Amino acid sequence: MSSVYARRAGIKRAYPMKASVKIGAVNPVFLLAGLAVPFASADGTAKFAGIATFEKDNVGADGELWVEVEHQEFALVNSGDVVNASVGSTAYFASATSVSIDSSTNSRPIAGTITQLEGDLVWISPAVA
Image (cartoon, one colour):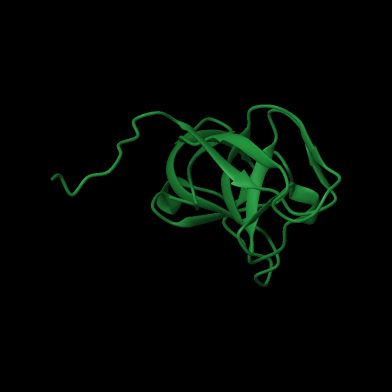
């Protein structure tokens, strides 16, 4: 018998949602205490998991709905302080569409690892590996 039970090559994942949150399509999704939340509900302990494929509105309890996310490298807007020397460092969301090298005293959600700069864009490998 093989020690491998399943394989996954795709970029789609799904996570249980926190109660009473709505996540829009093509918006960042964060994991906070194991539950998916939008940027507005994310704090300094939340980790970027990917981009929502579809809009989901969990009017029920924690985990009642799951949100599908795309998980791959994403290009986000540079808030102005990410430089080439930042490649390999952790980035933090400064807004729902921009990242910074500054955690703002650990209050910003963790975006992930900076993999490349390209003009005004910062390529990020999400914090949830």
